[in-house]
Image (cartoon, rainbow, N blue to C red; front, side, top):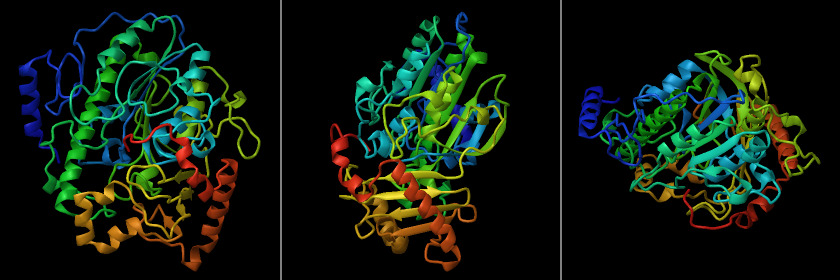
Length: 496
């Protein structure tokens, strides 16, 4: 738990220190947290923006490597996330949002195209979409919106994503300015002629864990999930990860205050997505729920009922169609520039606007995902994984199961502790059976593999058949697609 007494002292000391100083990693004007983050730019309100077009503005905030259950709105009692909590109280939490690929670059590009990662070409990490595929900023600008991004981009090619780029970087080692959110504030103030779409993509809490108040969380008091191996280095690493989450939370507070000062709060939708899971074993880089199940919160004053939750199963590919729908377009009539395996040119995703408005609680019966290790840093040469999930069961097919799963994690000192403390659990991270099946309702940490249990054979067969249909629709040839992954990377050596 956070030491709240220390927390308050840090706040007071930082406020006394200097209201104009740059806190570690963020350029803004008023300091509030000793953890290295701010909750406001300037305390005095600016003149309200007079926007002629009354369609809603949209602010989309995205974390980087954040497991959904590590924030207050989705169950954490360990991590201090007051601004995320505030957003949840004022909006709706979507309890069953899923990523389609548990690494950064494909995640962003599936979200921004409304297409699955294999279909759009961006399926390995550090990747690019196929030429001719259109993206969210193209659609929104065609609909009369201004569109900007600040922070991590990690997409390619740049010309396919015609955002106004307000600055930021695709990785953060803890040195210098991570993000200057005053640039976003200035851009919003200038967007008076049209409604705006502002996307803030943070680098937190992606490792290395260098931002925030690293003393705010006591490693000895950290509670680990049953999917983890309890070691000293794991606890220290988790405590630093928690500090970065609180730092991210403070940046969300800055964004909320930017919107409030414009006078457009009542006509602005604010969305927050956690991205994929954290960079601990069985999360990022994997198709377990801790890698794919994602937190999503949306606030829309007067339209979204505050303090509500919705159980509809959704995927990140549904976000672009939803934003087009909100902006006044018809996502069902759009040619995406990509033909799927069934000959269709439309989105893989569908609008969930009615879910946001509380008019619908069901969208999908199944969600799907893929992971390729070919091209991730220190990854296996080729360890193709595919999955299909219903409300109750998760089926995973490890196409190259005779190989050994590898990534940067298995080379870290804390994983060496795992191997010494629990050889069976650490070995399962690297050597897995061809098929896995989990009852995610009764086994939320995916610990008991039911794939060989005859009782669940019909369930496995059905999910396997659905996965085969999905792969065909995506033009996914499995191992053959995996082996072509290098051709989808415009450069190497980027961050994970």
